[in-house]
Length: 254
Ligand SMILES: [Zn+2]
Image (tube, rainbow, N blue to C red; front, side):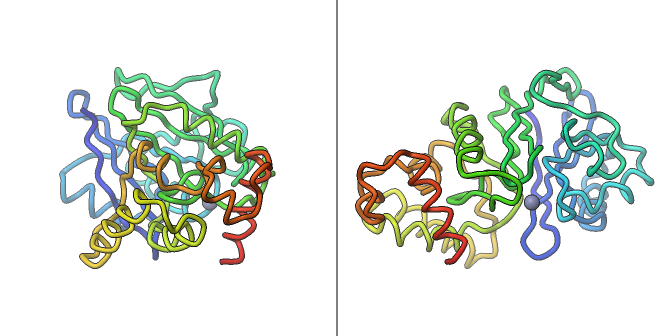
């Protein structure tokens, strides 16, 4: 099993150390800044061999160059955004899968937050790194894409196994959940998840990882077909993309 360690960075970012005990390979996903990553590596006595980026934003790549300078780690990121990933060595996309030791890692192209955003899927470990596309109970802002594009990207993630653990780029869960409750105040799964999230946050613990199964029941952006939400939005006969776009518009103003 892949070891995964959450590394809080900046105000509300998460980087993740991933380590394969058999090969000794150790990667970091989306290092915002080098120091917390180096402290976590030192605490475990792990040596960094790979840096993985889901997209080019600085709060996901700010640690790339300083970490590479010290460790000579290989930087892996979206091939279609080579020019915007600092220090990139290997560009990957859906047609060029990538390998971490003897693990096959699937790359999903999930654009809209940025035009070349990707996810790294570790099928055998039930883990997907979703960057700023899918959050717990939320999704990323549409900086470089349309609602249609984001709905297609989220639909791709929804086809993963329900047991898949979701490791995302930010701790936005509590605020996302408060927004979700404005749309589906009667959703019992959402109410239960919010209770859990509130007690985790009160203990200053991460709400991550979530699972795809929990997200399908609680994340409004994955639920445009929910009858309760459609009634709240007065969009009973709209398409899923139209409902999704309205949820995104409301969240931007929340
Ligand atoms: Zn971002």
